[in-house]
Length: 448
Image (cartoon, rainbow, N blue to C red; front, side, top):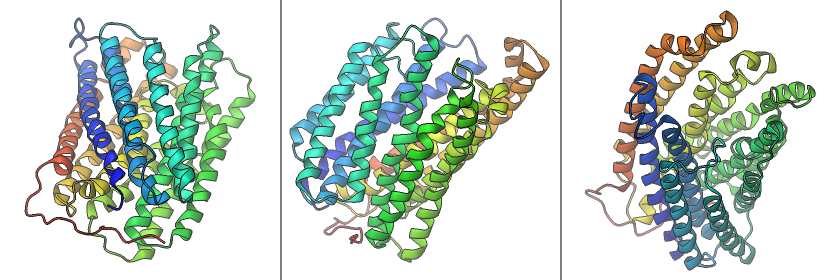
């Protein structure tokens, strides 16, 4: 580790992993309600559990991005972070806002818009924390070396902050509401977050493969172009049935095909760089997560997204368990695995030791990935059956839910296994370090 302020990433990673644990445990509670409908019905209703589950996901992912930025920006800019005090203040505000949101939900105080349920004061605090972060890292980059990695990361972060401002606009017209709602939800995860993903993966590849920086950056620009081009207009596949003009069926279907390309390019990019390097990096667990991330993202966000993005298919499958299958695999592959890859790479350096507990870490990779794949297949089959019975045969919704009971039990089982994998990961990365020597030098080959 070259710069003192890289240590700012450590508390962000700790907070992120704590929320990660809470998120997956609450997810198991939500899965239990599907199998036992009266479970916690009086004390903790399902809609509150779901809010906590989805909001915790977004918050801990953002905390991971912030921490990753504080770790990589000093190395990319070749200077210390502009203000460590601002970074600590940002962390306090962000975590306080997240906890305040949970307390508000438990008290029944929320705005009711899916994923944007946060009370107004929480949204304001989140924006304040985001602006503090943007000022801090932007000043660092402006005063230091400019690279493609830091530039793309800043573009993604600034775009995410600006698009979140649409969360404050809640028009009375439902069609307008959904249009602007998707500006946040879709363009975040299928647009600007892909820029964050690409820049973090580029940093990891530069450090772990030793491949020439210029080569990796050329790939980075291609992926960024594909992500922005396809992601912005690909939002159209959410406009099919909300009262927007019919031409969105053509635009949404066409650009949904193109949305697969950046994820496929990331798979080729990562594996080509590793093959080209021919290096055996000591942090094998970080390499495993870094290669697994684009693969699972390609299937979850790309293939499963494309599976029901055509208007002729979406007409039947919209809002079924197929959507849940896509959402779970996409978030896990594209963004959860991205953070876990970065944590695995950075934490040994932050703790000033050689890569540790790697076998346990890699076991957690396979346990979580296998359980998420099983959950995705389970929900996909449930969604196909639900689509046929509800949209073709015409059975009632609640009657169909009884037909899906076996799938919900299988989903719950996979969720429990996933929690076990998450606990293994947290123990592997934050647990005791045995038979280790202090890392006296930086472990990664320096990128040019």
